[in-house]
Image (cartoon, rainbow, N blue to C red; front, side, top):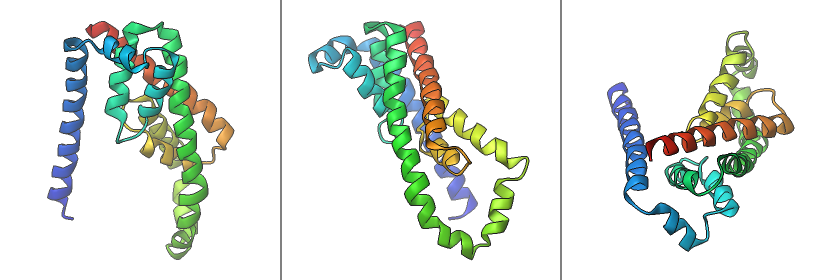
Length: 186
């Protein structure tokens, strides 16, 4: 794919993501979302857990953001943040485990073929070794899908327990940002 096509595709993704978030917040203000969630049985802690689980995937991030924003008015903020963060971190830990134990293992033969030592030397250089996890953490905090951030943290020297704690804290902060923004808009 040439550079102009790749750049146009990236712009298209950025525009559609921004438009999706705008449409979510318009829908929240225009429709009785709390009543819809009550009818579905998703207005309490179960809904917050479900919204957090949807919040992390590229296919469901917009729906998860919509649910979190709708639940921001329906339940206490601290409860939504903790339960939504738990749901999001459960999915992130699953993704982390998959990246660390399956994808990374399948990539090892390719890395040996492409001079693994050089790749690992670059990855663990003093500039890259702290920027990759930092960028991964920033992606997890944002309402953007977590797959890239989880992958970035998955190739770092972070064990699963530390990642789970970090993911929970970052996702709680991300859910908090969405909920506070939704409360401010409505």
